[in-house]
Length: 522
Image (cartoon, rainbow, N blue to C red):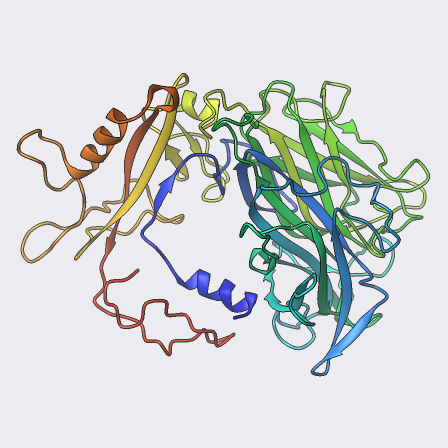
């Protein structure tokens, strides 16, 4: 099965989930910061680990044809080194995944110039390609099929081969993102590994369209913390992605960054810009501000004679800065900061304009109890989920995730559960819903409910959810004791219909029925 089919299938399967709010959290952010954003919030991760980036070499010089389609062929090396073995000087901080670390996500970003009007996935677009881990006994060329998600912005980006664009040029730029974790090789212990070399093949015909500018692999990993080993700081990694390019009408690019909530004391922070169309003779300056701090100029990673985006991979860059000892004059994320901004300003001479695919910001955060729940979340008894509502400011807003009973000085676990019933009184609490909706199960008549709170034990007066909490909290060693909190979520109406083993996706024709002929499966 190809990676593209797996991605389609994963989107079709919906589970009644138990969410454990511990070492890994995603798609959440803090209140406020209602500011226009060139790129869209993609995701955020809380891990006792870090992220790495590595770009593809050769995308503008090597091509091949498969079934009549021309592809650019590039090689991604982790750690990032060019074909001559020279490390990319524009990547500071972590460059490889530590041995034994768990791969949380492996995201491939690429940008393709396409004719205006060409739909993603159709001939002439850059959506579909291949990735192949390169090792003895590995898959034969071209490798695993990948199908990227078009992470477009609010408006189309017209593409020009030089200078800062203005109006329509008949060509548009599209950024694609694909989860390629399933294509990573596995070591002798059965763990996925991202260290090594990968070949990518993406649609490109050179100077015509489609023209792929470059590709970058982003790998997020976590390391086992505690349990007799070292305690690893909790790190928040936030990704914004989409399509955006500077223009003559708007030369300065300013990207608000949020989703890390609560920067640690003396935090270690990082910033990555993934861009296309960089050139060695076109100059721009990158800045970073944190909280209320003013913008601080970032150093030129490739030396003073090369710009921030020199086209290190040909027409592609992913410079990555790492900061310590941030202050009002030193760049980086400041303690207690919950938001930041990065800004890119072209020079007045030899002016450069690039096209963004993604911006990544990370910082160590305050997790005093080492349970994966930030100090500010416990203080506020919850947090705002930015993926649901970017304008969320508190518990009264859609997007607020309550954490009742959390407190500093104890290790907390939150179990968030849904349940089935034959009939639901109101709509589910989805991103477009209302926190006041009646989403309970209908009671009476022939209706049934699997809500664990529905019935109580006559001996102790506890329902099933309360019994789980009581049993868990009373049977732990004091050294690693956690406090379990069970929070009910949505009532889900159990359908009597079922899918068939022949059900397929209309576009990819991949099988989408994981449990054929099983009524009530969601």
